[in-house]
Amino acid sequence: MTTAEENERPRRRREAFFGRVMGKALTERQADLFETLLPGLAIDLGMPPPRDLRSLFETAVEAVRLEIGFGGGEHLLAEADRHPQVGFIGAEAFRNGLAKMLTSLDERARPNLRLHADDATLLLDWLPAGAMVGVDLFYPDPWPKRKHWKRRFVSPRNLDRLARAIRPGGLFRFASDIDTYVDWTLQHIHAHGGFEWTARRADDWRRPFEGWPGTRYEAKAIREGRTPAYLTFRRRDEA
Image (cartoon, rainbow, N blue to C red; front, side, top):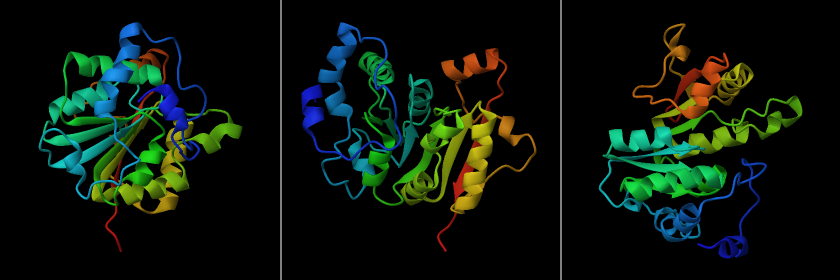
């Protein structure tokens, strides 16, 4: 889909992505991949969602997971390789992150991976209820200024969206190196009531997720003396 076609398509206002959607200029190859590769991978929200979300993938999958804001795609690609029997959807509105992902997929395709190149809330509202076995949100923008906290992805409205999309027993995983955002998330999860924190030991929050490959952003945070937190929440059973 061309930029002109994207601008003409009716859509509601973005709710969870603020600021620029692009940083440095794309290379000629990257720009070409947006025209040639992305259309075949992008999920068309203009169409009704399939009754069985697994049908979105080119290969047979047993379940579907979502990563919101995959950045350069290090974790998402690693998970797609580790779990070929799972279908993954990656949501990312920042075009430079998408360009890195498309370059990787052009070099080696993953038939169990689809993309959403826009605000994740648009995708969450489109998904059938209970379609996901897990949703990951790693190192989201912390919006450190108090006046911008309302822009943080973790919010009552978005937790409602996640609770609707994740089936009972499914997991919502969150990682951040910003302690105020970690506290914010724990408080909002507790107030929401749809999820339970799975931690059983005092230091569970320090333990990376199984198979965690790390990210470039995380490596930078550790070099700068910030401690990552890894939180896992389970969707409660419906009452």
